[in-house]
Length: 183
Image (cartoon, rainbow, N blue to C red):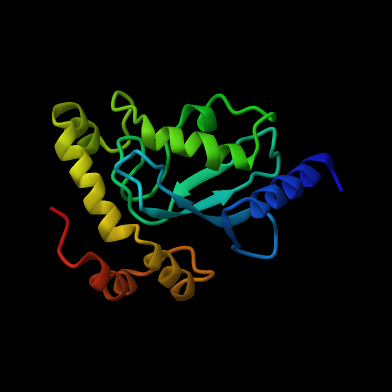
């Protein structure tokens, strides 16, 4: 086994032994989901997001790809794709970091301290800078609509190995969750 493979296996096991629920996407150890809870003392508290993680062949020398599966309202997360704009993952990754760092430090810091000056969601960034109270309220609305713990469990069973749902599946499965169209 090569060094990156051993490291990938070790980091994944370390993550699984922590308090995170990890679900493998396929037989390999390169793609998986992690259930991530919003940090305390933030408008994201109480929300649970399914995070898709892809480890490149060169991990840990190359950073993992991280994306939110269910919707989150945040200046540094693309609302449609779930892509994350986070310097430590995208530009300053180091092999000294591991997967537990991503979920215990990097993602909580991203949610606690959004950077509206480098947005992937321009509307969220503008609202945050213009009216922080309204921004916090919108975050809580998204948590209520898209990030309830029971929603993660339901999605798990509905799409255990499918990467994306078709438009029809979105309509049928999200109807009860979403209720009304986005404002």
